Amino acid sequence: MTDAVYRDTWRRHTQRQGLTIWLAWLGLVALTVWCWQIMTRDTICFFVTDAPRQAADIGSRMWPPRLSYLPELLWPLWDTLNMATLGTMLGVVLAVPVAFLAARNTTPSTLMLRPAALFLIVASRSINSLIWALLLVAIMGPGLLAGVIAIGLRSVGFIGKLLYEAIEEVDRGPVEAVTATGAGRAQVLDYAIVPQVLPAFWGISVFRWDINIRESAILGLVGAGGLGLKLQSSLNVLAWPQVTMILLVILATVVVSEWISAKVRKAII
Amino acid sequence: MRPYPTTWKRPPQIFTHRGWRIGLQAGFAVWLVLALATLDPNWARMVDGWERGLRFIGGFLQPDFTSRWTDISKGLVESLTMTLTSTVAGFLLSVPIGIGAARNIAPRAVYLICRSIIAVSRALQEIIIAIFFVAMFGFGPFAGFLTLSFATIGFLSKLLAEDIEDIDEAQAEAIRATGASWLQMINYAIQPQVMPRLIGLSLYRLDINFRESAVIGIVGAGGIGATLNTAIDRYEYDSAGAILLLIIALVMVTEYGSSYIRKFLQ
Image (cartoon, rainbow over the protein chains, first blue to last red):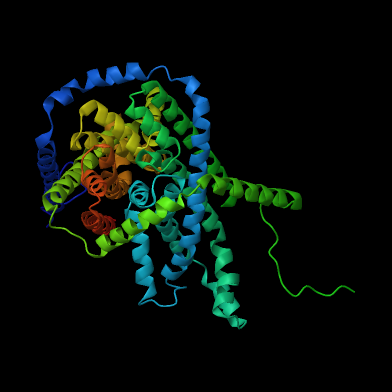
């Protein structure tokens, strides 16, 4: 009866499955090669072959970093930190109502307000803070304020998305218990939902603050103040030792802020 | 006899000492005043800019896709091709680096080297890397491709290494017990456990790379960001509005597309 010839080796997929997977990979490779050809159509070969020499050249100019430049960087560093923190606060203030409008269990209207809030979140998330800053500098003129608003607008989407997901995941029990006491909608929010999402809220805010420190360090490239402004002016005059110094300061700030945010999140959760 | 309190207050959780809380709040208030003082808004400039802001909002409501269409389509093609090729290249590079950075299968020296590559790639902003690659390789999408590939390495290898460190050891041990070599162990015990998540993460990274490709153009690394930067510099807000709408639409498409494929694969 069982005349079927068994293979000596074990195979995970049937022949058909194997063929489909193989074709999918082949398609991906073909697409990639095609894209590569379109992308490199205008690339000048000489620049590519010349790159190692250029890299060595820039490297030799960059080292050693100009330590005497450090005192000049302290004020921009303070600006950068303020920009990130104020921007995060602005983002939080704007994101909280948006998140409550976007969460399925707290929104006043699923048909009108929820899609609007979700669109706000997606729009804010898909535009990088550097682009926001580019626009705001064109409108408001260069300065810290443009950076703060850019950071704030970008943070709305991030905080809003994570917060509304946290709100949708709250435990139904407390909500029902508070509702059963005859509480109004606002009281249910205050006593049943807010205490449940509060730890997530602080965690998300601190996490975003950490990301914002990184972003605010480079916003100056488009004129929004802080360390990026110094970076831009040093790059413009090809003062590579100063560039190295600025990068070191940015790196140190990022490492410290990441450490703080990890500590705080561990303490909360 | 004391009357009962009529309202309930949640006791403080983190800073239980009263002095600490007051000190923290006072310090925060002082910082807020100092920080707001450094903002120094230029009101006269803002009044001037107001008209421009209105024009920009007008540009958003009535985007102009046609008059700069050749530039926009060139930027989009550059961005999209850059996104795909850099994700694939980053994936290919991050697999060996990720395996090397997993403590349970790599020797200590390899582990340290791979971890430091990841740390460098994660610590540097895409924009900063782009500045250097543009200085080395000249303007254009090739510098952008290198930037995004490098940034992808930090993201994918770190997550892959953490996945490998979290695998179910029993399967690796079972394969090892059959007398398999190290490569066979990777292929039969580790790859099946981490592959679905790795593909999901690569799709997520594809989505991130597209967003980043819209930004690194500002420093000269090609893509739609360069077109956007030009449009804003020329004060052509209707074209800029069109580009931004296209970016938002494409980000939504890639985001939903990649989450759909991820769901389909798992």
